[in-house]
Image (cartoon, rainbow, N blue to C red; front, side, top):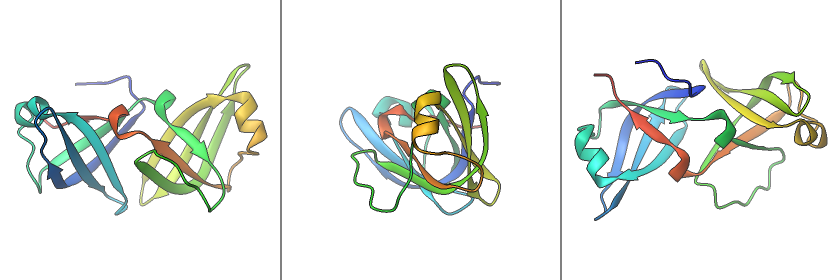
Length: 141
């Protein structure tokens, strides 16, 4: 299966917190950072998710927010630290690539204005913020 979502982060399931309707599933990425997704309990069953199983966090680039600085307080569950490895500016939006280390990269599509206001450029430290409810999970068939 091929997906249009730019971010397909491979990881190992470390925790599943089951709920009556929704469940939290946490993946440890290859760079040791954690990503938590909130998906339906039915999806946990349909995908046969278990601790120790490999899965992919699928995140649309437009669902990724970027921040700079160290004293960040946010309700976004996922805060992935890295260094900007590329910026492609467009007339309205920019595509920003954030290198999280060990070959793991996250792409974000943000406004050109935000790119300029945050002074995002190669080498700048930043964090990708993603709500847990914005992450889909996939497994190999």
